[in-house]
Image (cartoon, rainbow, N blue to C red; front, side):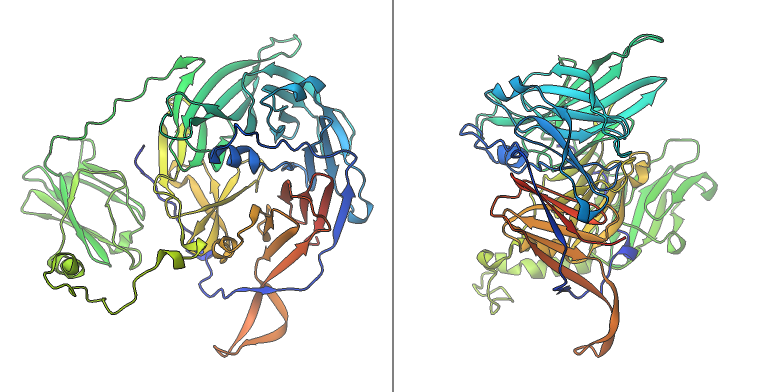
Length: 585
């Protein structure tokens, strides 16, 4: 597993430390019900698909697809193989979903068939899987102009074992139109003898227009890359121009094949590495960090290369490669930091932490060439905390009178993913991770398309809040930007034991959760109140209130699809499509 070399930077301006709670609102949510002509094509898991990964990939599949390029337009596939679209302009005049494409009937005869999947590749293209292993790339035309143009397949090929589509993008480079499609399979793995016997395969396919000038367009597979791992990724998306891939998964993934040829894997590092002298020593308090770097004897201040920003530091000798360079574990105040030369052979740097907080586990992310020196006070404090483990006194524990922690009393919201849970960016050229974030303490919540021209956002739990992160692949120094916050949603969603899907509006005006049956919960951002309210406990006036609403559907069938737009919430069952008017313009 690749070591973490990057940390997510929370925008404190988007946090609300004074948020109290959501207030239940009894305001009615207008709900409109569309009865479907044919049932949604739900493919149930077979006896051979018994693993947790099968359940995550196919059992919890969202059968409803939102078109991020066109407002309030959703798609699904019914049991007749029809791709159906509903575009809402007026809630009180909802029509029937209209057919835009139909899959060949023979695809339903595949024994290991999966659910059909759809991905909106661009404003004029879509990728469709029939669930039997065949990929269609469809030219849709401008879908939002109210035209009833049928989709035209310009690529149709059997790619082997059945798969679902995770993501797709379209781009043009040097006059060549290419489409990148990411496929997911859960396959039997003879090498997986200790676990379930299955592994997860991701296939990244590039399809390009190979026709010359004046010739009819012909699309062919240009490149196939395969990644393998042991868990279904929570988040998987391709960069807009196909230059990289981002994954959030509980187990690591590695590229294994390119165009059928095995990828050489790096030799595993030996367990025992020869001990080398550290090139720097450092220690810290809650307020600052002190660093001592060995320099050539006789060094002068003119010969020192030193550069410091809030998040990065470079130390070296003029005219030579840096001795120490990289991203700091946490932000510092460059104006309050300083350095001096000691004994003509070492550089002592004092870094002022941006704010008092927890101790840093490392100085520069991923750099292991330094040695941490503990102060006498810190050593004494740790010694006192560990006394009860080595004391001859059976009551050496100073906290013996306090009741022990009972793991059975922990709430669901106190549980975290395992330590290997990570967010990784892979480079298309090298096929290696460039940035890795350890998400061991951040539960994945959902994915949302905020801007169709950019990569999908992912929402993670941070403490009790839910933070939305926008990937910026063209900004390596700030690859994931914190752009929105849903206060206390991380804690609230953990209490929903029957939760099936979660999402939010693209403008982040509300977040929503739904259960397996019937109920949906809506959590709105704080908004000004029309009347004067006072908090009796604190004796202050309340200016904003965050509302919570509950919608109950007139249906006893399981929820199969769940999508949100800025104004509406769409909920799909096997026989009905419900439209909930959440916001007005």
